[in-house]
Image (tube, rainbow, N blue to C red):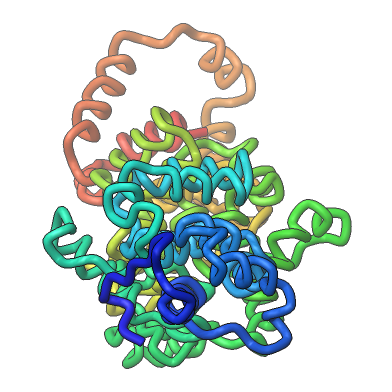
Length: 445
């Protein structure tokens, strides 16, 4: 039956007209006619509607609170997906924007399903559009406030129950360009030609258990300990049953105490960013501009906004989408040999190894050896110190260590800092003489 046509019944309508309206309500609200075994649960409200004891609005209010509706659209769905379905069925449109989404998500979570539907059915929009006697229907394009909002509603209207990725909110797969026609959402076309992306993608229930271990290996760099799994048990379960896709599971995981205790607490901001980029984007930080941007977000707006920026980036969308586990990306991705080498060093640095507390960006540029987990200066620096002891003797060395810093040394340090202020670190190192290099190593100790 066409759900784009307004069907109205009032107190003077015949039982035959009400029966026609009943079929239309089921087509609009349930997207099908009830099965025989389901009709027992709604037999009373059906009878009251056909006899004229219930108007259209009140009948729909009873129907959406019945097990028939809730089992189809509420249970086993995310809150956002349920809100999308409800707006489609009761208001004939998609959600308009972030403000409307936040308002109704908050209402649903804080006050429950009954208060959520009471808000929609009692709204001024519902009253003006359908009143008490008109069956909701898909409304005209003139209603929409933007082409994007119209396209969003059009996509949602063609998404029937059990089809086009029911578990994935349409607002997500539309933004990410996912194809959900078959009932299982697949990745954007640009990712289908990348064998690496395909091998890391998760689309079926059978993939999820193996994917879980792969996610932990990439994001935590290990499998969780038995004592830690209690805190993430609900996340694991939601992922395994399909309530969370890969992207949203990782988003919850990195905000857990398990992740933050391992990589955020006890690390500098720069080291934490290095780890986060390695785990979520499969690469190191690009340059000082990117470092500055993300440092500003992290220090001023916090960890949650920092991760939100990464997950919502065009780079993450194109590389991984909603269903692909992040992985170390190919050398072709890097924009310079230096950037590739930096990423290679970070990828081989495992948790607790190679100087976790010291950002790789620093020990790479300074030529430090962090293989053992404690960063030390190169062997040639130690050799210089031994030679100095041999020539000058123990007494002279002690005197030199206790002596105040000379004006000449201060000038050398000031000159060195000026050289590094606005120049590329590698270029500065190449232009330094041996004395300046030695001074820099001493300062870094």
